[in-house]
Structures are given as structure tokens and as C-alpha cells.
Length: 382
Image (cartoon, rainbow, N blue to C red; front, side, top):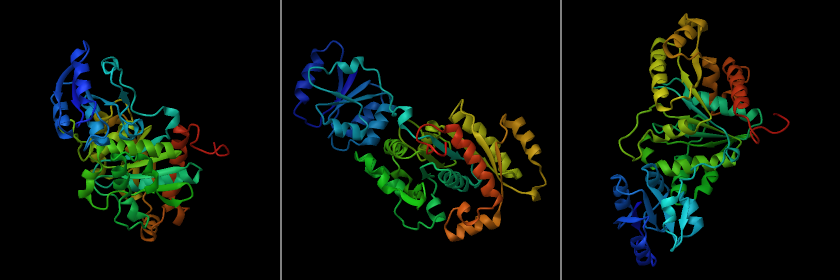
């Protein structure tokens, strides 16, 4: 196996080189001077593993994530186990047994299923179909049903949930949590959650769209994992775009793709007007390519009689063009949603009898029962 070495002048570097040169299983492809050099080498496919020191200057959770997803196994040599775990490094080696990396089978990056809260991703195409409104409605309804719920605003094109709930601070919970995770402090992700209601906490999104580069790929994965260990249910409001970037580097849409890939349920939201339906049809085809084999729960939002279309007619159109039939139709309750927006509270709090609230609570009950496992609902409510 070809390996690269990034020791940063550690005391064990010379001994490691001698051990690799004497090994029949390993071959030293390159000694890297820093993290930038290490990432550049990873892009060339010249090595299958990287032997590093966990305290290498510039090595963070995002760099580890990018190396692993470029097919380079990261192993820390003679390093602190706690720091390795914090950075997402799953392999630790000691001098004298470096060739173990050649026999290593990569371990799953995620915690066992029973240790993770279910994740519901709310996605929809461009054109403001109401992704954030639906995500907030689902999260608040699930919390009211007894699920300890975390709502995450992960729309990298501009978060809105903080403003919708009267959280007007420019500090982004998402950015703060990702910064902490990227420097090995993923355990602090829960410190950036804001209590909204009983059983409902919010991780606020980006107050400015140009802040998206601060949501680093590896750090965001660690934040999601931490939140799923703290809550009974996680609901994530995603961005609309599913375009992928070139190479292994992160891009603006990576957080959406990560969430969709990890979600237990994907809720796809669309509008029932002609433009909204056209975008929804194209978006569902794009979604099928981005996460194949994962049919979404389809929700048609903002339904109203003034369009002149019955639900069965929309059903037939979507079935013919996408093969998917909507699970729920959410009425466009302009007065109820406006009242929630101007008061900075959830729709169910200010307009409990709203037809929108009534329908979305039925949908939330169905989704929660679909993903329910130990810890999602209290015993009395299960």
C-alpha cells in the first residue's frame, strides 16, 4: 500500500520512515510538509493512506473528512486518542505496527443506528415553495406530540427560521457549531441551540448568504452527529440546489446533499400553481439522481381553491410525470401564517385552529410514527 506521511516534525517521524522502508506492506509515496500539501496529494490518487500526527498545524475535521472521501484512510501515529476522536480520525497507530493500516477495513463513519435520533430532511425546488414553513410546522408539531426535537436551518442560500421566530441576533448557531466542531469541539454543538418551545430547540442558520463557506463539510457532519445524539428527533431545513461541485472539495450545496444522504425521511415540498408544479417535477427528477432509491414524502403546499384544480387532478399529473403521489396537501392560510410571521412565533402557537396547522400536525404524527424508535417519544405518548 502506498502511504503519505505528514508528521510536522514529530519526534517519531524518523522512526516511522525507517519502519515503512523496512515493511513489505507499505511504500512511502511522499512526505507532506503541511495540510495543504497533504490535500493536494490526496487529489492525485498516489496514496491509499495518510499517516499523520493529530496535532499537525492546520489539520481539522474538514481536512480529515476530505481525505477520507477522497479515498485516503487517515491514521494518527502516536497521537492523543481524545484529539483523534474529536477530529473524526478513527484509526490510531503506534510505532512498530504501522503496517496495520494496510490491512485495515474502513469503519463506518456514523454511530450505530440505535444511538442516533431520526432525521427528517425538508427539501424543495427553487421558487419559495415553503420549505422553511413546512420544516417549522413539522418540528413544532412533533415537539407538541412529545418528541425532543431539534430544528436545524441548513439553507446555505440564506436562513430564515431565526427571523421567523424573532431571533434577530447576527450570530449564526450553525456557523458557531461548525467552527467548534472543526477544531475538535463537536461536543459543544448543543451549546448553540436556542430554546423555542417545550421540546423544541433551534440551530439558527446563516444571516447572510455569503457566509456559506464557513459551513465546512467535515465539521457539519460532526455537528449533525452530535445533534442526533442529543435529541429524540432532528428536522433539517435544506437549501434548494442539488448541484455538485467538482473534485472532492466542499461546495455550497454540500450540506444539503449530506442531509439528504443521511435522512431517514425526505419531505419534498412543492407549490400547486403551474410554475410551482413544473419546478417540482424537474426537482423530483433531480432529487432521484442525487439520492437514488430514496422516494420522498411529497407535500403540496399553499393549496387554494382559486387555482381551480382539485387534489385528484394534481395527484394524476404528478403520478404521470414523476411516479409519486402527494402524501399531504397543506392549505394556504394567509392570515394564520402572516400572524405567525409578524409575532415571531410558530403557526400552531398563534393559530391552533388554522387548516394549515391541522393538516401539518396529521403529517407530523405520520412521519414521527414512521421513524419512531426508542427515545423519539416518551413512553406515555408512544
